[in-house]
Length: 262
Image (cartoon, rainbow, N blue to C red; front, side, top):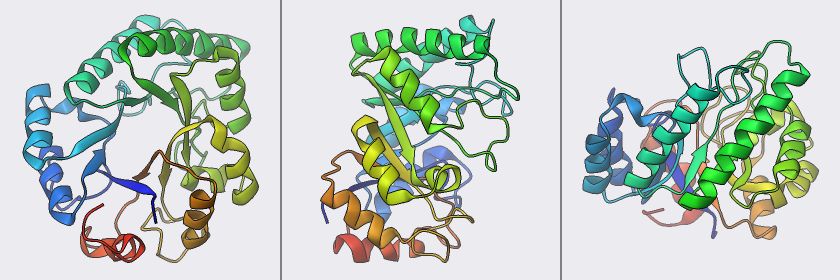
């Protein structure tokens, strides 16, 4: 199995309250690569030190979301300054962490209008231009209505439409199979059609968002085989909530990779 997996430190290793401690826990489990959502509550130098001490690669971070209920600014009119500041801060963390991917969040918009669509496209165009100069891949992710009611980007059609319009090699789709199942289903055909636009994949079981081998709607053994057949060679982030102990819950990954490091 050639697929590459990275631990999501915002979901996994909740045994430690501090993000900084989770870097070492992931390394002890055998991970050589990690991702996380929002590392900004800790000083940059401490995050860099934790990553360095754990000897892991940082694959992805999210741009700052604002307040906990905001989930980003990209589709919010009259918040362009906040959006640009969030991109600047994300880039500063990404460059220091040697991280090449930034997830740009759209924000909460209960009833989107054309103004929201125009704002989103304008802000993403700006971000893509900055990412091109910095050698960073920006990704956008549709999120299902159950996990984030009112999230602007809740449609794969809208995501692909804006990616085609901006047409930047530095702006791609983040395909979370947990969200894909709840937004569209029909995983085989949708993964095949969406994969040309994908720069990063995440996963969790549906509906409880636990490990992929826990009871739920998705047969991940089949999904992994499909991704192998389609020659997907980017990273897969494990954005799931462990059902019990994080390390013990990794038996599925150890069986899949047949190794103690991943």
